[in-house]
Length: 474
Image (tube, rainbow, N blue to C red; front, side, top):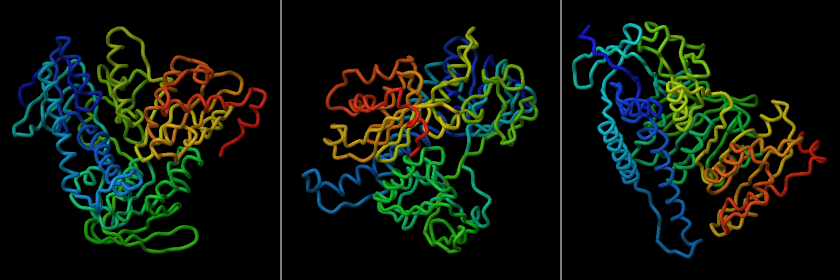
């Protein structure tokens, strides 16, 4: 073991929570080090949120060009250059990495590039990326380990070298026939994007609907959107074996209750869930416990089972969103400064960046029914929002759940253009515990998508009619 270097704060992983912990601690005068094995800034700016949205926007532009005549433009035959699509994405990532390096320099936190492994409580050895070994010990240790794509245990799948989101974002070609395993948000975003680039795309989903946690009316509408883009979606399908090599030729053997058949393609993308990065880093030497799925055991203050060690973000079992990881950082930071914040009762929004977007905050109908919460339902088609008509993007709907015995907003779903922005309005009202009537009676700018909230909340049934609405699930 090399000579031990002492730090006030030692962070393993430079993702959202880890980097803000480091920057804040260092600015407070604490000697701080962050150990990162490669992705400066974590997954979000390098291989996940931001690069994927960059690629999705390129696909949106390609789709607009193909439909330019609908908007009175004439650009000639459309084509996609995936090398240039990738170059645009890489340029953005390079800028983001530089921004992170500048913030490390400004804060005074040490960024140590290498593979960290615990050898004792709060002590780790780091195999440096440029050679050599360092041993670090922290008075306080923060784990921000992240997750990686799960590869299902299907015969032949691993040998086929399937794409994950990481490799898909680096493609410099349009796959001939891309087969996607999984009907969650990652699979849907990539399916639509590559269909718009020109690939034949097939989604294989084990369950009876896409987006298993969403209401059926939402899932069915998204399914329709994907099929309009030419995506073949097959539900209730079990893949039993994979042959061949992704990038060349693959054959998938499949079955459902009615039949057994095969599907051929050129590429396969796995989007079936995530696995925490908690194995092989010596956590057993620290006293940090794991749950049955391999996530770090934490309490509502994100404290682990070991003293002076915290876990934040995906590896702590928090909802798998960058904005949640940032809130994890804020909870730990505030508590270390005398606060008393917890993860209980957080109002967590999310957005799926398909076109149109799907966004939700609070309960949907399925969750309300499961929780025994009576509700009044209001639903508004997007074509009733005049801004959508100016954009020629009139597909989708908004819906809101209001308590059956009060004017509390329980949840809101938007499936339409700019949905990720519109939910922020409703989320703010929910955080302020405002009655739904505040949005019903508000004056919104015309014409905007948020203007539709007035019409939506005007359609909330009176309380005397709540019984029928509370049992309704479309």
